[in-house]
Length: 403
Image 1 (cartoon, rainbow, N blue to C red):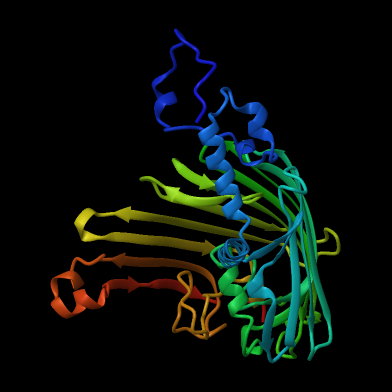
Image 2: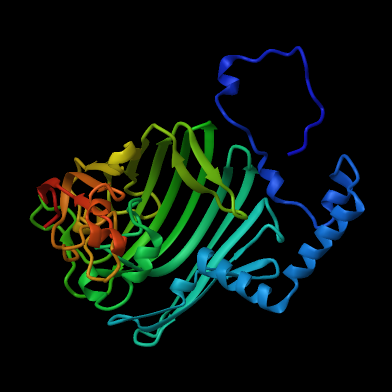
């Protein structure tokens, strides 16, 4: 921390002192010789030798290798100059639709630019012999307010049972679920173009707007619906085009972040819950779109510290659509067949076992953090911990599905 340029006799309102500090986001981005000119005072000879020794340790081959390995394992990306290669979990997968899926992804880092960000991937399946790709471009208007504009284009296999549209889906869990029986997840080919904008309107309030257009093409012969079910001669649709606009508002007071490179990672809030509200409006006859609909979703989550009684984490989710839709656009409880625990899903539920037009769900997890296990001699030596987990859900099943 650099203490200089003091301002005296300038009172501030009491809210000014609520934060411990405010860090300029540009502080993470600097050249190797920055401190030679920015340091307000010269360093001693001994300090200079100390810095030189630290730099020399960093150049030792063994240290560099382990630092590189740990960095890749934590972030999932391998830095190669101005580009990061990854995510490593998406590099390979095997399933009964694509066969051996090989994927190469990348993203630019701050050495390339802190204002222009490019991400993408290219994948190929040995069984379906199809190329998949994705390209995403972001332009930052302000890193302080995390305001950016973006455009993306992709052609990939998505799944009705683990849809990428669900904001409760962890991308890492989604990549693990790409293994095995993909047919059980309702696979379809999705060709999508999207434009989006996001900004922190005020501290703790984030707004995102996204306009999408995509083609839905199922890979199996078990999907079809009547486009106009109330008409006798309604056409039977097996593929469709959908255009929609998404308004997403996120309220998170006192939320703290870390900024690794061009990303922003939330550390959660101090006391208050995080509320996310999403409204999706389907635009019929816009860019050849076939469907008109409305969807409302809400998610409330929080981590609570309860002193000696441990820590509680809860998540309340709800969704509603008053529109009549095919199952691919309804709410599908997230199932799980893998060995990886999914916090946001029902881990004993199969894929596409239920689908509904409205639901409410509570996800409650309490960690006693040794309150019980530390008082039992054998369990204390084994360092085991006691958890209580419940996921009740109330739904109205599929009352507005297009037949």
